[in-house]
Amino acid sequence: MLSDQSRPVIAATLPVVGENLGEITQRFYTHLFEAHPELLDGVFNRGNQAGGRQQEALAGSIAAFAGHLLNKADELPDQLLARISHKHASLGVRPEQYGLVHEHLMWAIVDVLGAAVTADVAAAWDEVYWLMANVLINQERDLYRTAGLASTEVWREWTITRKTAETEGVVTLVLEPADGAAAAASLPGQYVSVRIPMQDGLLQPRQYSLSRADDGSTRQITVKRERPATGPQGEVSAALHDRFHLGDRVQVSAPFGEVVLRPSDRPLVLASAGVGITPHAGMLSHLARTGSQRSVTFLHVDRNPGPAILQRQIQEDLAGVPSARFVAWDSTSGAFRGGSHDRRPGRMNIDPIALPEGAEYFLCGPLPFMQGIRTSLLRRGVSPRDIHYEVFGPDLWIADDVAQAA
Ligand SMILES: NC(=O)C1=CN([C@@H]2O[C@H](COP(=O)(O)OP(=O)(O)OC[C@H]3O[C@@H](n4cnc5c(N)ncnc54)[C@H](OP(=O)(O)O)[C@@H]3O)[C@@H](O)[C@H]2O)C=CC1
Image (cartoon, rainbow, N blue to C red; front, top):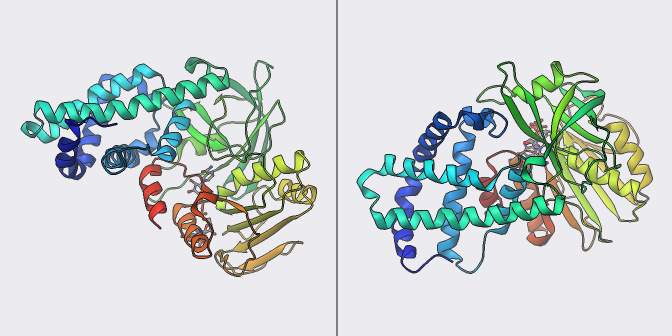
């Protein structure tokens, strides 16, 4: 993979590059957007930029990739790369954009590290960049090819045909293609990017899991109004809640995402928290629609003492999957919400839950929640190979490593 001349140079400079990656990526983005402000119109998520999370993500992914090249020369970090390429495909990223990123990233490395960047050092980091970029370009080309789309055809206009309030701060939107053409098939667990104009006219994209099975003509997403503790409030989720109504159009990407339910007879355990229930609701909906006989254990924790997100759909789908079981935890009041399912107070505790033999596991929710559940599962002897989890947002790469180490 990495050439013999670059390997020692990367090994020698990774610590200093790693130490300065935060500053390098910050200067990189500033320089990139000064030269190409159009990239803030529909490609980059400026909420993540403002909160510094995009910078951390890029820094983390470069460091993780370079470290991987040094430590595991014969294999690629597949999970890391697949997550990036699926997300890029959902944004219509094009090969030539890697050239732009390269130019501005190398500029930032030299800008921050100065004379330490000798010709050899620059050449070695150039090699790391293109090793990673070329894998991503190829993977993204395959994703576009499989979807039967050019990168420029990923986005289409869709019309909001239903808008339902779920719980305080969560709405479900049903969308239909504005041109009446058929929708590309989606897999259970996949997401779409949604792109809408902000008050200043710039388009902003966000990813949302599909919360109901593919029916060939509509897409359903369920959106929580984002109120992060740091950085700006979620401007796209707020706009979808407040400014977008029935009949309005939004741009929606083709479906992507690699954490999907594959055809299988194995028992399934779904564990979600909060709005992380959305991809699992989509998976359950798919199982109900296809008359699946799989054993399903659906575990969910929420801090909303009112009706749960997508409650009616989930109850109907549970009734449609003969061996499905639902257990809910209420982390706030400790009160039981009633209803026909097993309900428990406090945060999710899977230790007393019987785990079916030979199951596969899907986790979705805040990162610490997934780390905690994953650790409990590993302690009970579940193989890491059988635990799938989606991490939305740019802390993906670092999160991935942390979760792997848990
Ligand atoms: N496809 C995907 O990858 C998707 C991912 N998501 C992700 O799901 C997350 C959901 O967020 P949101 O609805 O705001 O979650 P909340 O912050 O509202 O938390 C939801 C529940 O999770 C519990 N919880 C939080 N942290 C932990 C922890 N460390 N250990 C155990 N339980 C915990 C909370 O308990 P308590 O009240 O005690 O804090 C609460 O009951 C987001 O991070 C979002 O990015 C969402 C949709 C799709």
